[in-house]
Length: 263
Image (cartoon, rainbow, N blue to C red; front, side, top):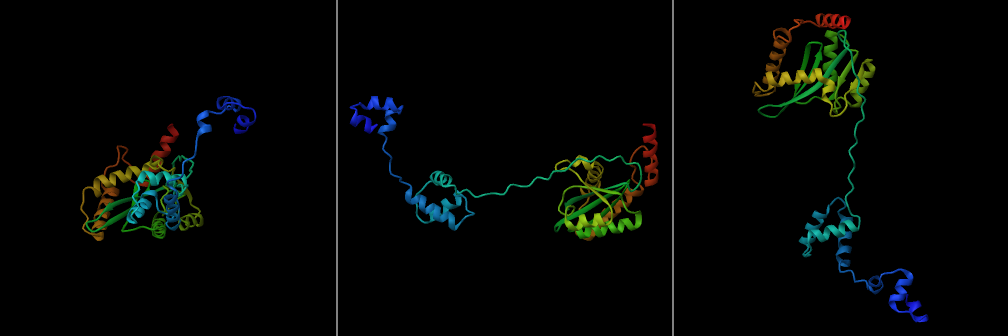
């Protein structure tokens, strides 16, 4: 524009129209960066504290006597690309697997229930064997202790074909996966956020909490084991379960077979 105005005697309006430029843009003069010193200080501070967000950096600047607002720090913090990078949580991808149960030991359901003692935390693992649950009560249950408890149940009741469980760390650990592979046990993990895919044990957990955990006060771990064991024995031998009237796993399997034959 300056060349056209100087050599062709054009006015400013004509030159702006020739190059299709707004006159205010041609007249604009850049202002000096009043945040240059603060910007440099913020960048140096962010390099020293790479895990600090803009609020913590503002607090550090305020302690050093810099009278700057959080909004101003945020604008410079964002303009310089100093945001703390956060790792995205990995989402598990599971395929829903439906089971048609017709015999004993075809599938076991495994889950955990948490409650509190008068002195701390209590964990309980529930295994559902047809209509006979097995409960392991302790302060913590690692994958090693889970497999040890399952070994004890297998010695008494036989090995299951399949175990259905959620995606907890105890049930997705290398130890538990290798144990299932060595035992030739098929492992079914339900989809995350879909507890209804393990509905049998979830229903049992509700009865356990309603009839035992919420109805008792556990003074310590020994007291909790005794009360939960007493409820388990009552559940297995005395408690009425349904109008079908079956009690043993064999009777339960016969009911399933007859219902499958009749459709």
